Structure formats: C-alpha cells, structure tokens
Amino acid sequence: MSTPLCDVLREYAVRNPLRFHMPGHKGKFLPVPELMETAPFDVTELSPTGNLYAGGEPFDQAQQLWADLFGFETCQFLTGGSTMGIHTGLSLCAQPGGRILMDRSCHRAAFNALALLDLEPVWLERTWLPSENLIGPVSPGVVEEKLEQYPDIKTVCITSPIYSGMLSNIGVISRIVHTHGGKLFVDGAHGAHLPFLGLDPFCGADAVVVSAHKTLPALGQSALLFTSGIDPDRVRQMASVYGSSSPSYLIMASLDGARDWLTGEEGWHAYRRAACRVRELRTKFPSLSDNLFSLDPCRFTLKVKAGPPFAEQLEERGIYSEMEDGGHVIFICTAQDSDEDFDRLERALEDLRGRMGDCPPIPAPPLPRQMVSPRTALFAPGEMRPLWSCEGRIAASQIAPYPPGVPVVAPGEEISKKELAYLEKIGYNMLSEVRVITRG
Image (cartoon, rainbow, N blue to C red; front, top):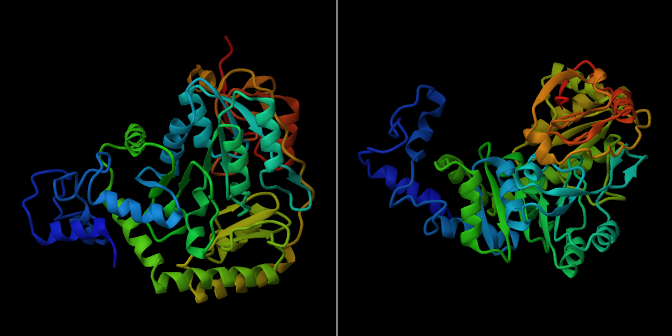
C-alpha cells in the first residue's frame, strides 16, 4: 500500500495521544454510533499530521501520487467539492475584471466565479444534436474562431465530460488555446475515474478539477485540482481562499485510500467490470452510444419518452438515478456497483421497456441577452417572483431545468418571451419562483 496521509493518521491514533486540540470529540466519541470508527482519523493540523495549505509532508507525497497518475505537475486536495476547485482554478487562470471564453454548459459554480472575479463571459456554444436531444461536444474549430475574434481573451473554461458522459477533445482544444497564448481550465468534475480506465481525457489542460466523490470510493465533498505550469505555492494560497481553514482529514484520507485501491488489482478489475456492464446495457436498451461520440465508458444515458415519470417508476422499485430530463434518465455507474446491482437494474428496465425511446423533439436552448454583468446581478437587490410573471425581468440567479444548474438563463440575462416559451416547452414548472433583480 502507498497511503502517506493515512499512514501518519494511523500512527498518530495508535499512540493514544492526549488531544487538547480540535475537534471536540477528541477522537473518542461521536453520538452517531455508525460514525464512531472514523473519530480517531478526524484530526487537525499538527506537527505529525501536516498542514494542507503550507506544503510539506504527508501532503506533498500524497498529492504527488495523484498528480503523477493524472499526468500533471501538481495536485491539490479539496474538501469543498469541485465548486471549491472551480473557484480556485479560475482564480489561477483568469485575470479579475477581464474576459473569459466560457462553455455555456458550465456548472453554476463557474457562473458564481464570474461574479466573484468580475469576469465578462463570451459564450462558447455547443452544437445542438437533434437526434439525441442533447448538446454535443465543444468544437475545437469554434474555440479557435472565438479566440481569433476576441484576441484579448486568455482564459478558456470548458466542461468535459458533461452530464450525459460526452467528452470533448481536450488535447486538440488545449493546443489551440496555447497557440493563442491562453490557459485552458477544464471542469472535469464527472471524470475522476477516467484515468483509472486507461483514458487521458485532460491531456494538455493547464488546470482541471475532478470530483472524486462523484465516481470514486471517496467521501462526499472530496475533490482534486490538477495544475501544470502554475506555482504550487500560488495554488495552495488560492485554495486556502476558497476552502475551510479546517479541512477535513477524513475527506482527505479517503482520497489517499481511493487512489491506492483503484491502482491495485481489485480496483482495476472492478472499474473495468463496470464499464463492460454499461456497454451491455447500451446494446440492450435505447441509449446514447459511443458510435458517434467519445463517451465516458461508465455513464449510462437512457433514452425515454418522458424522463421524470420514468424516474418515478424506477424509484417505486427502489432504484434512484442520478438525473432525468425530458428525454433521458442518467445513471452513474462505478466500481462499487456489483453484478447483482446491474442485474437488478436490467430487470427493472426490461419491465419499463415500453416507456423507452425518443421523446418529442426538444429545441436547442435560446441564448438570452446579457443586460448587466454577472457581478452586478449577484449583488443587486432581488425579489422572488413566479416564473410566468417574469417576462422582461433580469435574472439574479440561474434558471435551470434540472440539477446541478446548467442554466437556460444565467444571472444578468433578460428573461424574454423566447426563454419563457422554451422553459414551458421542456416542462419547467412555470409556477416556481425565481430570483430577479428588483426594479429601481
């Protein structure tokens, strides 16, 4: 085993020290019995346990093992999820107050970063795929076209993979960005497992954030920020701006252990078994396949006639999907899904086969008009109003059809008749309240 952080935590716990330091449970007692075994590992910054934001051991070694695995110079452990990594990464790659070329399908954390850093977005639109009722990968040609049109832009932000599992060609895109003297930041939150399947999905990027907790055997909020060509001291400093000054050692220990298990024989075989089972599901049921697109081997995007009622039928059978929209139900499959789990899912899908197939065509989402900056929208006085009554108003928060918040309307954009018509067409609840800027 090679678990530098876990090793020092074990050594500290075995010594049975007097813990006159945080946390208050002192490694002895937690009122929830199921959590008791974790208490001895839950420590704070001490001479034997190290300091995440100061550098040194055991973090240097534990993080370098991850960096080497992903092909980057440095790795930074994150205990605030990919949200923390997006804020940190964009702070490292973009100049506050400048312009940024940003993928419209970015997570809401990236939109909040625009406001925090006072960045002006130039939207990088993806091709709409009518045959799939989904957005496609980012076109390298469109990236080059936009960078030539806006030569002052030196930061590009792209999401890959997206929720459906579709991957963009980061290697080609990164070369284009670097040719124009820029930096490429990738929100790879859903792709932490891909290198363990022998893929190199982030090749050439300057910074990448991945959510270990989404697809790896690691605790919730565990994430990783990988960088190359950026001063490690600066990475730690910016991470400390957005992270807690008391990062969870339990979360970080789970990162250390997940990497070690996944690089061993058991983890290696478990993830490949999951990828094989997903491939079988794709052949048996109507789904997004890798015949035309580069896909995450473990993401199963099922095509259905109506997503929400299909997901409800699954829940009645005790099966909970990750996400559904008008025409898809998305399943995150990992090394921890056993053959029995896949068999149970397959039986349920057979029962519901009649509800599968293409849903009525969904139009491409409109591109709203930007009225004020994301920063102005975030900090302006706002009010909650039913969506149906918001024509002509300026959004103060994202309006999105499903979690985690890829917006149809982003903060600072006008909610016009065309956006309302689109949201109603895709089944958005027009009675739901949204936050808009208060009229002066």
